[in-house]
Image (tube, rainbow, N blue to C red; front, side, top):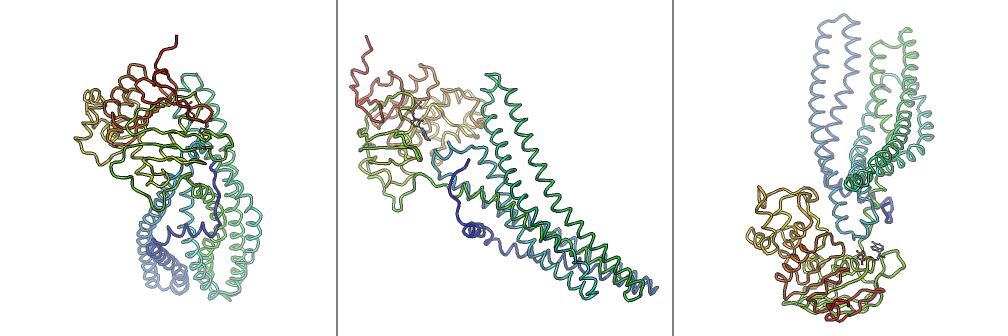
Length: 571
Ligand SMILES: Nc1ncnc2c1ncn2[C@@H]1O[C@H](COP(=O)(O)OP(=O)(O)OP(=O)(O)O)[C@@H](O)[C@H]1O
C-alpha cells in the first residue's frame, strides 16, 4: 500500500494541466488537423447526395465521374492529414507522458528509506508505468476527443437539420435512453476499474519480489508454491479483467444498439418520405451518412465519463505517490561546512522513533566521535545500529536532540554535501548495470580515469579487474552478479575513496564475507582513511581491535566501553 494524503481534485487537475500547458501549441495543431480531416469527411455524404441526385437520377455520366474524382481526391488529402496528425499526436502525448513520469520519479528520489520499506516496489512500478500512461491518455486524448467530438457533432447536426429537421428529431429520439443506461453502469465501471488496477499492482509486485528472490525460492524448493501463487493471482486478475471488459463492452454495445435503432427509425420514416416523393433518395442517403458521422462523437462524448473514471482511478494512485512527504527536507538556506572541517560528530540527547511508531529506537543518547578517531559501535541485532547510520547520513531527523558535524547541526547543512561527506560502506554493496568504471565513479562522476585507477588500486579492486577481459569497461549485471561478495565490497571501498568523505562508516551488521576478506578490507580502509573519522558498526567483538573508542548500543543509548578491556579475550 502506498500511503500519503491526496490533495483536492482542483489542485490535482491544475498539476496535470501544468504538463499540458507547455504542449498547448502542439495540441492545437493536432486539434486543427483532426478538425480538418473531420471536415473533409463531412463533405463526403453531401457529395454522395449530389452524385445520386445530379448524376445517377439525372443520368449525367460526366457529373458522376467529376464527383467521384472529387470524393477520391478529398479522401486522399484526408488520409495525408490524418497521418501527419498521428505523428504530431504521438510526439505530444509522448512528451506529456515522459514529463509526468520524470516528475514523479524525481519526487520518489526525495523520499526517505522508510517509504520504500513500507511500499512494495512492484506496486510502485505499476503506478509509474500503467497508471501514469492512463493519466496521460486522459490529459491528451479525452481533451482532444471532447473538442473534436463537439465540433464534428455540431457540423453533422447542422447538415442533418438543413437536410431534414423532422428526421433529425426522429434520429435522436432514443438519446435519453443512452443517458439513463450510462447512469446505471457508471458506478460499476468505476468500482471494477479500481479493483483491476489493484490486482495489476499485486501481479507486478509478485513478479518483482519473486524474480529477485529466485535463488531463495530454488534453495528452499518453493517453486511450485510460488507458481501456484501466480496462478491464484492471475486467476483473480483474469476474473476482474473479464468483468471489467464485459462492463466496457456493455457500455459501448448497448448505446450502439440504441443508435442502430435510431438509424432504423430514420430509414423507416425517411423511406416513407422518399416513396411519397417528399424527399429525394440522395437526401435520405446523405442524411444517414451524417447520422453515422454524428454517432461516433455522440458515443465518444457519452463514453468520456468512462475515460474520466479510468483516469481518476489511476490519477488517485499517482497522487498517493505525489503527496508522500520525505522525512527530511533540504534546509532553505543551507550552510557550508567550515573550511578545514575535521569530521567530529557529536550526538546531543538524541532520541528517535520511526514515523508512526511508538517505540523509541534511540533514547536521549549523547556521544562524541572526535575527528580522525576510529570508533567501534557494537550492538545486538535490532539495537538500532542501522538506524544510527541513517541518522548520521540524515535520512531521518532525530525526534529530539541534535547531531552535529564539526559543530554544525546536520539539519542546517546542504543535504547532498552532507551525504557526500559521510560515506557508508555496507556489506551489501549495490552495483548498478553499467561498467566497472561507471560503478566505481557512481558517487563521484567527475573523477578522472587516473583517479578511478588509483582508488581501484588502493582498494585492491585492480587485482581482479585487471584479469577481466575488458578490464574497467566490463559490464556488470543489474545486481553485479558476476562479482563475489568481497569483490563487491572492495568496489564499495573504491567508491568511498573517490567520494573523499570526512567520515567513513563501515557497516558490518549484515556481514557475509569471510574473516580473511574482512581483515583485508579493514586493513585497506585503515591505510586509506587513516586520519579521518572512521565508525565501524557491527555485532562482532573483533571490531573493537585498534579502535580508539568503543561504544555499545543498548536500550537506545550509546554506552562507552573501555577499548583495552574490549580487546582482552575473555578467560
Ligand atoms: N523503517 C522502519 N520502520 C519502523 N521500524 C523500523 C524500521 N527500520 C527498523 N525498525 C526497527 O527499529 C529497530 C532498530 O532497527 P535497526 O535496523 O536499526 O537495528 P540494527 O541494530 O541495525 O539490527 P541488525 O544488526 O539486525 O541489522 C528494530 O526494532 C526495527 O524493527
